[in-house]
Image 1 (cartoon, rainbow, N blue to C red):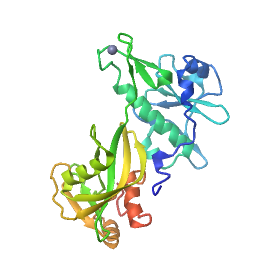
Image 2: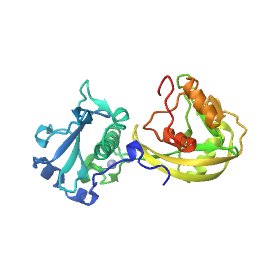
Image 3: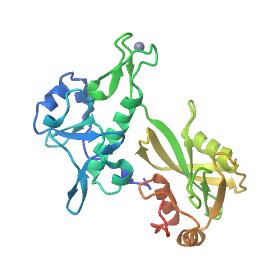
Image 4: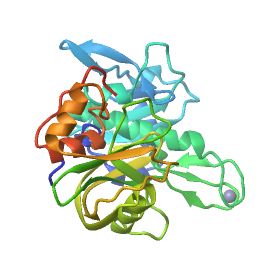
Length: 298
Ligand SMILES: [Zn+2]
């Protein structure tokens, strides 16, 4: 796959999904002092120094408050179990956007999983059928309604994100009217119900910039739990490069050749998306190497 080892797509811990159906799983892990617990509040987590960098500040099960929501993240090859618990964030807790580039594969995988899953619990507390408060079951991987017995599963929203290129191998980058000046990125949008990924790519590009896309090629994906997206990356070839921006989602869109983009970034006229985003990786995949940030990063 052309786009591999994306910052938030890294993981090394077995999710051990078959263990989730054991109703005693969480209590057994809480009774085992070897269990490691990741505390997360509003998408942030405590960290500590390790080898000159940052690492998750994992604690033992004795430090978990009785009433905290806890979910099962998985286990290591040596049998160590991992839980995430919801906690009140401290002032020095750090978010996934910052930690995504600095944690190792196992730790970034645990944190991405925990932020995504706990974020879903925070916003899906009631039954969508009858409105009753639901309860976490299956190690935190679903919620059950005590009134009508229905099960409700964590949500992931697929979004397509695409490097649109033309016959001259230029790339199309656009900016949202809500962004600070000079920020440009690849186009992106949510997949609609009943729609294929390829159709979503063509529809979003046509809607936002009026460009007609032919071939669509999958390049890679990464979770983006802010709050619940899965970013699915493509290369899309324009059959007609004429740009007509919609003015609503996209305020400006331009074609760049490689030298033009490099010069614009170095001059501060274009600010590229952050290094942990798949958008940045799509741009660099087209460019052929990493691009240095200009005077100001995203
Ligand atoms: Zn219900």
